[in-house]
Image 1: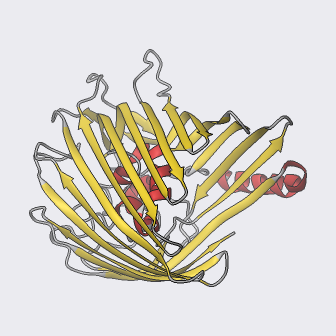
Image 2 (image 1 turned 120 degrees about the horizontal axis):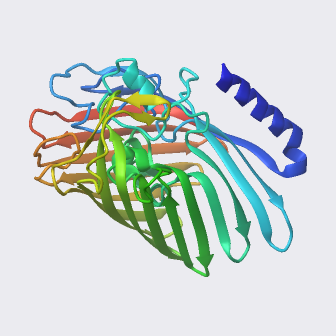
Amino acid sequence: MKKSLLAAAVLSAVSFGAQADGVELYGILDAGVATVSESLNIDPFFPSTISVKGGATGGASGVSQSVTGLVSGVLSGSRWGIKGSEDMGDGLKAIFTLESGIDIGTGNLVNGQQSRLDGSSYSSNGSSSNGQLFGRQAWVGLKDAELGEVRLGRNYSLMFDVYGEYGIVQNAQLLTPTGNSGAVGGGAGATENLRLDNSVKYIGKTGDINYSAVYKFGNIAGSTSQGSVYSARLGYEKDAFGVQAVYMGSTDTVTTTSSTAGYLVNTSAYLVAAKYMFNDTLTGKINYQRYNLQNPSDSTVSGSTSYYGYTLTSVTPRTLGSSGVNVASAGVDYRYSDKLGLYAGYTTINYDANGSKPQGGVVSFSEQYASLLLDYNLSKRTDVYLGGMQVTTGQSGYQGLNVIAAGMRHKF
């Protein structure tokens, strides 16, 4: 009830101040019908609706039935948001963004933790969206025409930013692993770090060179490092060519493993991505990510922990030593016309042999994802699409799966 009243108040404020303060209401509504083989139920709260991370939930051992139904966010996570700016003169602006993720099929706020509490079989999947009113973004900042911009609040990670620009097959949420999984799609091994609470983000550009940095405060009394995340980005874009590099690390990150339990882990990662426009119709993209999971710096942290209003009754320090995951993708975007586009891509994920998952034992396996998308623009803001993905896995006891989906997306 409180969330409903707050949402109504925010919308009233937008209506009142839209013209005077440059406030804009925006969003994406994406809904499609999809079939996923060897899958669990379509979830009304899980951010990606269906997990297609082969070897995690979809494609799990013993799951032989397929699921067909309406899914939210085949290409883009459905959302609504408010953004605005105030021109203060001399090239300086005050800026803000508030953005909320929704499940278009049910109207629910996306809420990974709620799906676990409801007994969903997605209990092994963490999320960076856990029922917050503005779970995708919530920040305020300043932007200078020459010096760049600073944002304070809940920010996207720099890796997530790069995948949004350089990801294959539009980084589609249901048709690519980087779109579907926060761990490999921007959280650098910890899904919870795809979006960074209590963070300061800087974005700058000089000529053809862009650079960014972000720091997340842990907000823990007596410790300046516990729960912190730090990251930097450097890139170059000119004419047909672009390349980006990101480093990201975290200290004592809580990554959830069920509705009541979590692990404490340190992470470090880097991402290199490039794209080249061969001509007006064909663009090639390639990216490589390596992330490592290590034992936490503070192994004494344990017991009950508050997690977005939920209680984790146990948080166990990771004790498997260091391990890592390699994520590599390549793809092409072919724009046949202003309206019709064809996108194809391939991703491989390779897990180290000495325990690549905080809750897992010693594992060594790989996953392959082949993705294809046909996208047709009905207008500048509305498109319809048909796409599919095939997942194969080398993990013992798990099987691959197939995804096929068709739907529409509207941007406002």
